[in-house]
Structure formats: C-alpha cells, structure tokens
Image 1 (cartoon, rainbow, N blue to C red):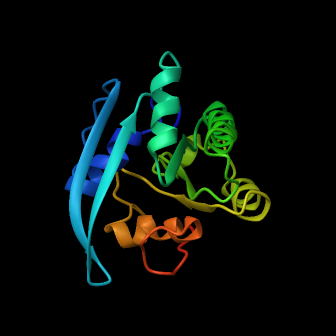
Image 2: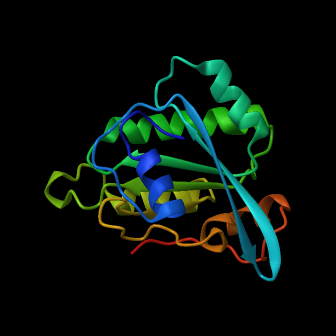
Image 3: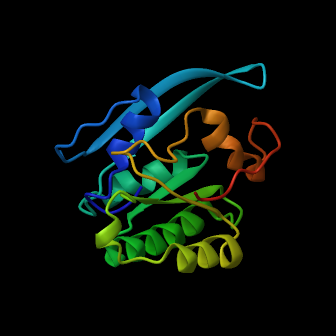
Length: 173
C-alpha cells in the first residue's frame, strides 16, 4: 500500500517475476498469488496490489480487513509519499485493532540518488524504534534489496502468530 507512483506494482513484479516495467500504469486492485516452500512448508502467498489513489476507501478498508501483513511503500524522492505511509499505518492499526499488525515500510526508488528527499536514518528511527515495525530501502528498477522469497518478506507475520519461521527480518542496505 502507498501513494500513487511509488512503485508498488514494480516491487511486486520484481518479487514475483523478477521483471521491471519502466512505464507507470495505474492500478485499481490486482491479486497476485504464488506458491513457495518456506522452512519445508508449502505456503501460498497472496499479494494484493492496491490503488495508490484514495478514491477507493471501501476497497482499501476491505484490503486491510483481509490482510495478514502489510508492505507500506513510499518513494525516497517524495516526502509526501512518506506522509501517506504514516496515514495508512494509522488506518491499518485502527481497522485491525491490533498494534502488533506486521508492517514493513519500504523506501523505493533508491536508484534516484541525486533526487533523494527522505532521509533513510530518520525513517529507520521512526519505523523501527517508534513503531516497532520493519524498514528497508529498495530499487525495483535496479533490483536492489527486493526480497527474493517469501521467507524474506513474510517473516514479520510471526509477530501476529502467522505460520512462518520465527525470525524477524529487518534492515536496509
């Protein structure tokens, strides 16, 4: 989840298909599903690619109600998208009524080095220290720090008692 144009679909495509499409296209809502083996157990990972538009509040609320874990994505070159992540996190906690809902905050577009306007250190402090959530930065375009398996992306589910290995993965490059 995240604002429009932050690269949610690009991260999902990189994660599932190891591909990148440079042309942005708007997403309303798309469900992606893939089976993996995690610690000897077959796991079906369902990923809901949500709209970055806030024109669909009922769909967003339903996605939150049905979600087990959340990746909140912002663009490192746009501070407003980080503000959207903060609002989405609050909405998730309110809808789920669970302050331990597994959330990973992803700063995307690290390939835009000279356009960075959001400090990784500031976000890291807020996300991991204040919120007790995971944080990482990535570039879907350059395939940098994009999880390659659900084990890397799904482990935060453990905090909510979901069936994944009992390891919490957090960090940044």
